[in-house]
Image 1 (cartoon, helix red, strand yellow):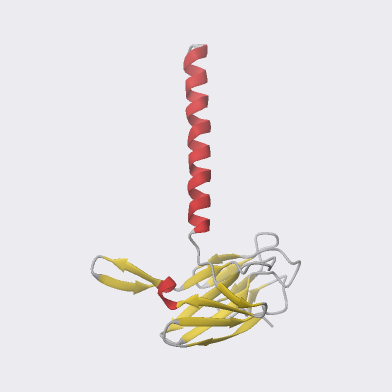
Image 2 (cartoon, helix red, strand yellow; image 1 turned 90 degrees about the vertical axis):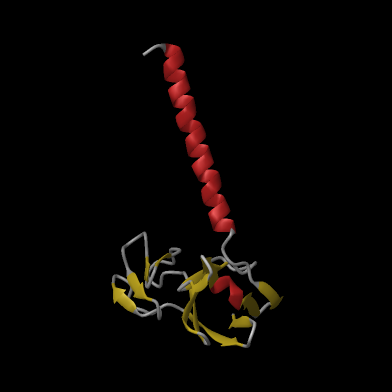
Length: 146
């Protein structure tokens, strides 16, 4: 391999990495951004749970929201048409930001696992996650942050 071929190969790899990073940022930004009507409540449109599959509308199990002045995101699970639960994605063991994996929530630091109801499934965490009061109407889900 010549020096020129090597540089082209490395440059292509770097460009691919940058492109994948940028696409990851786009995916992250596409998560639901709530309307914050006051410091203690956010509103999320119910349509954020909808996605089209052909002519059919299917519903996401959850969405993540990023309230403006909060340090950690919140996951909102949809269990039924008017049954929602909002959970702070902060581990009760060491305060690490949690990952959502479908119906489970996991801690990347020490492998604690939680259910989609915030209950501890696997330690070292021994306290459930913080749950927010949720109400809804025809169009919005309201998460009370107080």
